[in-house]
Image 1 (spheres, rainbow, N blue to C red):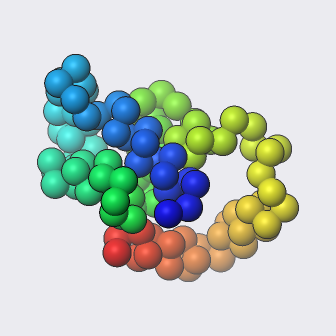
Image 2: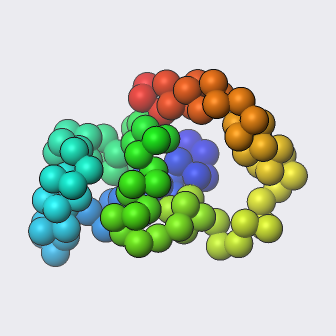
Length: 106
C-alpha cells in the first residue's frame, strides 16, 4: 500500500474509530453520506480501498485539515519530483483522476 493511501486510512482510523469518536463518526456519515461499511473499508489497513478522490476535499473540510495533512505530507515542497509530475499530469488530464478513482474502489 502506498504511503498516501496508508496516511488517508490512518487519519480516518484515528478520527473515526473507537468509542470516543462515535459521535464524530455519526456526524461524518450523516454529512458526507458514507455508510458504516464504507468507514470499515476505508479504515481497514488490510484493504487498499480509500474514499473516492472527489470526496477527499469534503473529508478535509469536515475535519478542517488540508489535503496535505490528510495525505500525511508535512510540506508540499517535500514532494519528490516524480510526485509533482504526477500531480501536474492529473491536473492537466481529468481523465486520470477517473482512473485513480476507479482504482481506489478496488
